[in-house]
Length: 115
Image: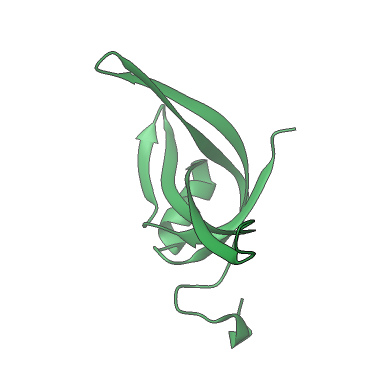
């Protein structure tokens, strides 16, 4: 089963473009991650940066209502994006949004009661 669930903040404003008669919206998401350092026992916090695409009306909604720094809760599926540049094959994992929920707006605290 290829279903991924993320909660994170937009790393840039969503950008929409036309592709094959449909609208596709691209954006990045920073997702918090942490692990315990085996040597020191300290908890290390870090961000993981992921790329997403969202097709059709959902993408248009993201583009119209979301800005850099806003929180999103996303359900997506992973796909391998492959291309060639100057004879060098390249690839990356790209996530296609299946569904999402708005989270807190940039600057809104957890304790505001609005998110």
